[in-house]
Length: 67
Image 1 (cartoon, rainbow, N blue to C red):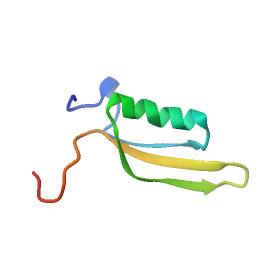
Image 2: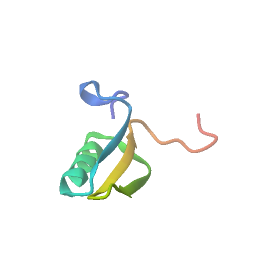
Image 3: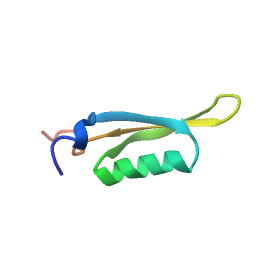
């Protein structure tokens, strides 16, 4: 995997949108590019729709104590 995300994309992204297939496809596309999930997804209700968020990041995961 490259040390930098493709096409000038940022290393950290917060994907947000309505909880629908389009949002799931956006997350899947980011994972296919090489991004990794960061934390759990979040969901809220705005009075009309469920709105979700998923943080993603570019880079290798490290465990505590690794350099």
